[in-house]
Amino acid sequence: MTATVNGAAALVKNELSPLPPGRVPKHVAIIMDGNGRWAKQRGLPRTEGHRQGVENLRRILNASAREGVKILTIYAFSTENWSRPKVEVQMLMRLLEMFIDRELSSLHENGVQIRHIGEMDGVHPRMQKKIREACEFTKNNTRLILNVAFNYGGRKEILQAVKRIVREGIPEDQVTEDLISRYMYTGDLPDPDLIIRTSGELRVSNFLIWQGSYAEYYVTPTFWPDFDDAEFHKALEVYASRHRRFGQTDEQVHNPA
Ligand code: FPP
Image (cartoon, rainbow, N blue to C red):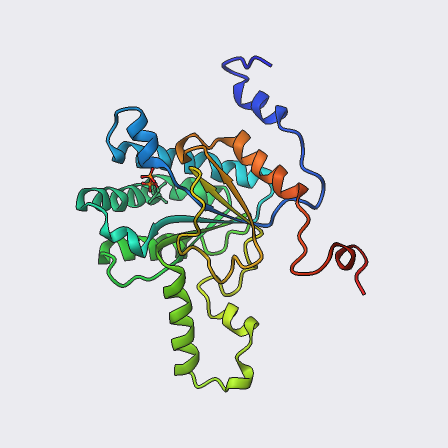
């Protein structure tokens, strides 16, 4: 179908076939990879790829809310990303700051609750303040939880959980998988149902390594700036068609005891 200029958004939306009822993942996590290669392909600086990456985040946030996703976790900056060239790190910091400055009121109006997962150590105090204020300002919103993994590393997350458990003197027989889950940054949230990685890399990259144990993975060759509503919908369709067995047989899943 050819989209008219005015009706383009509506047509694109209508063209997407609805997902089977009850099969929308509640929690989707995304490794937004490929900004650098997107830029390189176009002869642009890597920073332009990140800028387009932020634009796309806006698009996928809207799509998530529209599709009925309740929690979206995005990998914005890993603990390993500090070792990138200084100018790129500065740019990523600036983009996050600008994203909060420009989008906060609209996110708030659209019922988005912003949360930070990761460590604040090493983050500039001005940035720490901005992140804390954004989380505080939106904390009562319920339409969509946006977890921003910033200065995040999965191993660090497990390490801080273990340290807190030891520090609090929790007896060994009370240390269960549920308890450890509660000590993760995502403590009160369900594990991700679907983890999407753009740009084709078949790696976990230290992202949600505890919470992602039973997640469905979806990898697309599309670079993050090009990962649009239709691609997102396709990922949700693939998820809806998967049979999650959580280690059981198909028979057990279909005929629970
Ligand atoms: C991976 O692309 C992407 C990142 C390391 C950062 C993702 C950040 C954004 C989309 C923008 C900032 C986020 C917010 C919330 C404002 P890459 O640089 O590794 O790409 P490459 O693998 O092609 O080099």
